[in-house]
Image (cartoon, rainbow, N blue to C red; front, side, top):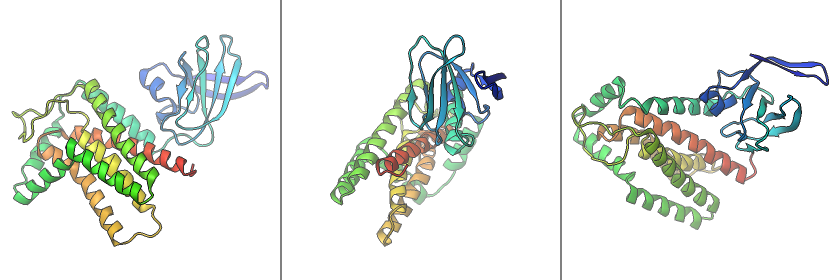
Length: 301
């Protein structure tokens, strides 16, 4: 631990500051719930406040530890950049500690993703797959095939385009654009992470594989896009002041789609349960970002 002291005022700010040296500390910063309130970074590339829901104060120091720049009230989803000749930055949260749900979700997603780069599947993955695939019901099988087919690329693109057109037609233009862009962005990010994690699909020697896919397994893009797109539409409907019967029916449909897509991907042998977990975690993060941007667009910060 390090001591941070204001020499001009002879005031000790904290005696428990931490120098961020590990990869996780440098990546997450104050998002990591295990870190103290004050963090010291050694970096020439600036810092970010992505996924925070509170503003923070930032101090940039020179080589003699003198403050050369102070950024007060740096809002979430911002970048703090500076001249590369400086390298010492102190993060100080304003108000209460930045410990919230999205921070926990982000931290968990990163941990699961890192583990999945070297672990093809977990024991619980195999147990869950065996349990779900042991369901012997023709109706259940048809439902799983139907739900999963909705997420297939040609059909899902058609659904997003159709619903976005209807939203635009009924004067919900911001909702149409934001929902479609978030769906596309989440799908692209999922594909990128698939390449980085490079996890193989479930093996037919371990589980029953009903669909054969050439891309990688983690995370499940079906689950990711369902969570982001239908989750945003769910949020939009719930915020409507007067919701009619049709709106309530749509709410139920969206909830069922989000809940069942993960089960369907496991049932068909397309993914392990941990792939589905990664899809839901990343989907919730994208959904939080989408809702934040949507509310900011409408001036509801």
